Length: 167
Image 1 (cartoon, rainbow, N blue to C red):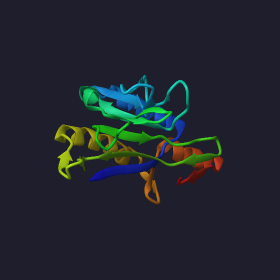
Image 2: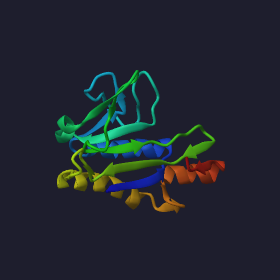
Image 3: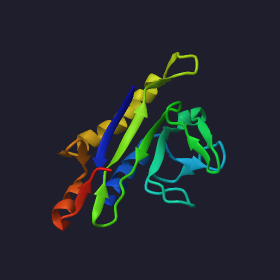
Image 4: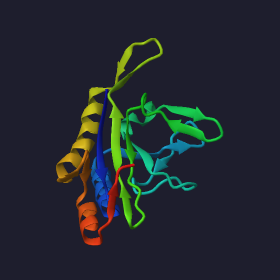
């Protein structure tokens, strides 16, 4: 079963969310791709890999880092396997000054293995991941369609007549 929350996060909202994440004990940010099977650590959720600006990163508990699975992608390196790994996929919002596209936080509670057996992720992971999704739901009071709107995004859209767009 998958859980997700969609949102509009202005760069200021992202900085606030990143500060909240880093204040949580043991939260690590991973790049979506790496050149080796070992995921690349990022200093924060506000930056991407050095070689490319990617909107997707993964959040993981430091204690779960050894359980992160990477899948080889021909000619691209390795991709974090979010289905089999205890990670939260964080797809950040695209923002160009005039347009803000929605982002999302997403995770799976488990998966079906190759022998068609359900493999649940640990409950401690679920609680940790749920707290991250709840942070958005509890602090982003404005809602537009199925997405929560961050306070900075709401202010920007109102003051600059900026466009909030679904992908």
